[in-house]
Length: 289
Image (cartoon, rainbow, N blue to C red; front, side, top):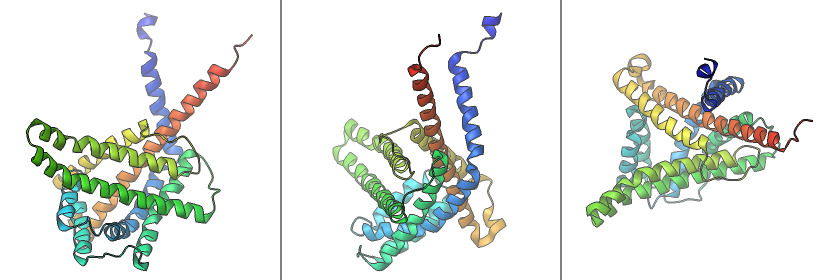
């Protein structure tokens, strides 16, 4: 009877991991930090779009914008897609072709504030103090902002080119090429989040192409975004409650959900590293007696 009541070890380990994750979520004040991060991301979003359009003035055209917005509409609430879409369309129609202008640099500087906020949150999750000088932390924030722009541009090129290539090839191979866009987008998202987890905290670790934390975070982000989008479409009445600010409130809530997922992914990685370190320590410890 006692053997029948024994919980499998793997199930006990999973339960203990989720318990530790819940404790770390509370200890890190994750909801408060995600709310602050969402606020900074809101302030950084439109300067980020300005910087992206300025850097990619050749690639960004109305067709590319509509393709990107179609992809965004698959996961984000309609209000978010509409708000971002209006800004992107107006920027592309304005036609900024200069990269090294003072206004573009100012846009990147403002957009990097979101990365700086994420850096502070990840330092708390990693349980490290920020000891790097301002010029270095700001440089890293600017660099990761540019990297994020680069990833989005790669995604834009793939989103536009893949259907055309698939139609040109045709047949089963063309269908396969069209379907490959989905796993490529997922892999790019995992890799980009892994870059942020590696570069932003004041802690050096070997770089990995993917980690369990980044994979879980991307999956959670997709599920949470779809769920929130369905809620807004079917039940949300933010335009009634907030009037003209309804779309901005939806955007802010979506950024809050996204921020929570990013931070939880980092917490998963930290807990897994601690478990590996504890296991290695036990294996290296000489047996008693």
